[in-house]
Image (cartoon, rainbow, N blue to C red; front, side, top):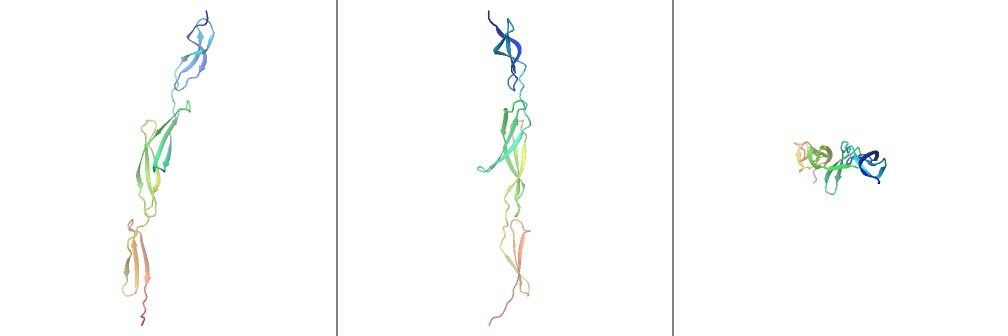
Length: 173
């Protein structure tokens, strides 16, 4: 008569369950105990994905002068199952630059996928302003021949540079 294979489970494993497929066992002949070498039947449920918490990578794109943030999570059932998501990154000044110190920007990465959380990073990327000294003014003191030269920074009027000069004169005949 020959073998007749339908869906009778032989209990001999052909493949383990994966994230996307249930386990499969070889089928047994309906008439005898022979086990098929190639016919299988699904048993149980697929595992489904079990993603770990996301990791995040920030990169600066010097060509386009923008920050990029990418989220990634890996399935613990199969590390070849990886999902990634790119964020929309915006920046806002956290600390203004001064004449002598760089300023800071807070960059915020927002994701549209539910598994990735909003990320922020602070970067010292605003160039220091440098001093912008205005015109020099001169103050003469009464009768003693001293002069004070002074100029004030337009970016911060507490930045003042002064120079004192003692002026002498002689009469040439």
